[in-house]
Image 1 (tube, rainbow, N blue to C red):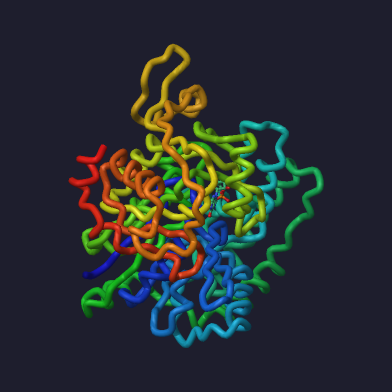
Image 2 (cartoon, rainbow, N blue to C red):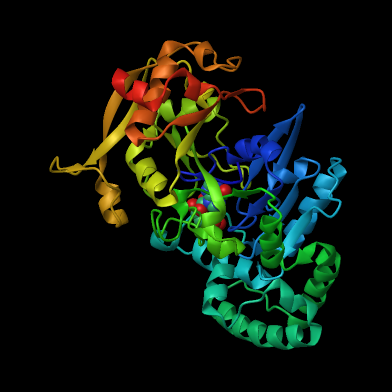
Length: 442
Ligand code: IMP
């Protein structure tokens, strides 16, 4: 087995970090290809909790190299802080972190620009972002005139000149738009960023060439998607999305590695659905059921601490995501969280006000907001699942639930997770029943 990609098929926070961490044993290099410090992973290992944001979870495994590809947006102080925090927890970087010199840099004015829209009184402009400057940085990247890449920081004179022009433009714009905006000083920003560049130098390289060389040496890559496919700027619930291709479509663009190098495509889903920030969410349970899921699943953002919106599994949305991301198997996470519900619902389709059945996710959020889920109701279970280690340890209703998801999505479930620890993972599902047997049971 060669290279693998792991991608979320919902609105992020599917517990991808745990699966990436498990798969590290079979890979040599973990690659992030999009997003920035808006992502958050929590990995629990040997009783210790590690919180990662920009740095791939592979850094927790000695001998595994970690790459922040060209498609990632890097806020240097956030990256340096994360390196310091992990070092203090005993993580040895030892030449294992590589940051692309083609990655774009998040600058102070990006954070101010994000305030501009997020504090706007217009709900339409308010996306509920993580306020890490991600969107404005990507906007400057595709706009080209104001983009700053890591490589630019190693040409100080040119960088200062470029920054003077950008800061002059941003000052004029932001003063007009933000009443409490304090004028930025290009020269002190340049000093600050050149210092970050000096401290980051040891990590910076041409990761595109390096990754190509590693593939030539048959080293196995593990691509770690941040956010989830439904937050993809092209394929998600636009405009309530992030600013990058968080589906697997981002891999080739954001790492320089063609996707034909990938052998295994794993889609990660929670056994239910969550979303942070604004945007349509057809199966949302803004009621005691949702509160119960939030409490049992500790559904609060890793990065922002915001309570996550919770609801039932949405097979329409996941089917769309699985197709876009081309995943060929599923990992069902947090199954233990659903214990104790008398019945569990799954959206198998949507319908509009006139009762027309909708099987595919509509493009327009106006249409999506009007969709009402058509639910299938399954029997719940009361047993605590956190000690289950094998497929047959699960109560029949929990097995039936996983099988039902597998049937609906037409994909085999190869991993079931019943807790945050590495050992709380069921890996023998595929030997228990083949997809054909599952279909026959339906
Ligand atoms: P941004 O990525 O900060 O621009 O935020 C855009 C949208 O994506 C908001 O709804 C965020 O809450 C959401 N988002 C960004 N990163 C994550 C993540 O890692 N998990 C879940 N949602 C995220």
